[in-house]
Image 1 (cartoon, rainbow, N blue to C red):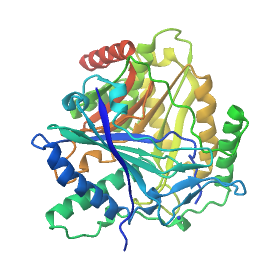
Image 2 (cartoon, rainbow, N blue to C red):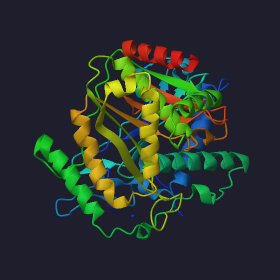
Image 3 (cartoon, rainbow, N blue to C red):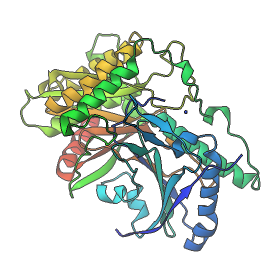
Length: 445
């Protein structure tokens, strides 16, 4: 695969903000693939690309914080989002000779080639850009939009809402002969920070945790530089597994027949439990090794009072099972049911937990990620609606969350089936082949 960078430009909002909790998280990265078989290079650069840039400029008027940067001044106790008059989003325009059908498919794909479709998010100790984009043309095949968003400013729901808003503006602009139409309420972000009532100093607790983690590594506590990323080997590949609605129902009935408990048997719980047991079995080795896993959930509606569904920010709440189980608990015959029971309990606990416990849980994530022999996590959600991002040339043929590796998986709704689920994975090919065999054979039992 070769990739040619055509330009790196800045897109500013068309003419006509607060504390950061996850300031050291790696950027969330996602690639949207759009098929345009009849599009020539000339048509793309003269028509499609200008429409994408114009609609981006228009929608940024409603999403101004994405143009800014996170800063952490020496005399300030915590980071802030700063938006200046001339701030802009960096947009990289590229062309590639890669196989569009391969990279936008569901089979095994080289991890390095997917990462080539993503922009960098400039991050330094004292400042970090919030969002970067890369638009890549696959000549006579289609194009991709790579999105890299800083987790300190937005979560998956916010960044996906932005892409859908951008797509909405672009599509309506094409339909209405260049008439600018306002965003619908469901895509208009809410920035009212006064809605969050923190009476316990949660933000100060979180900042202390972040600073202590950084100081352990470099003896510099006031830094926005991220935790080092996973090193992807040359043999690392992506794949997307699929559970149909029928598969989910079959697994759900399997749990009901073996567990007398009143469990929360959502599609998320069933799918995550099933994949986690496959990952543990595929690793093999010492079955007495401690293992941990977690997930995060949107707590906008769980606050008192609840936040609007369109609240702009990172509002994710972690929950997990930390070193209380060994690999043997999940690799045995009843491992799948065990995982379901644990996840069901964690989901049910959300209704009784308070936001004040987020700091404790956040610290546990990093403490146990170090000592666990196998640590799993999940990114994305079946509720984000990533396939609703139609810029006017059709829905994406595929959407991949690329910021995953090892035992971290991604989840999204199935593109063409309600109730189904897509599960993204990235690991070395030898281990992935074992996972795929276990995944397939387990559905046939």
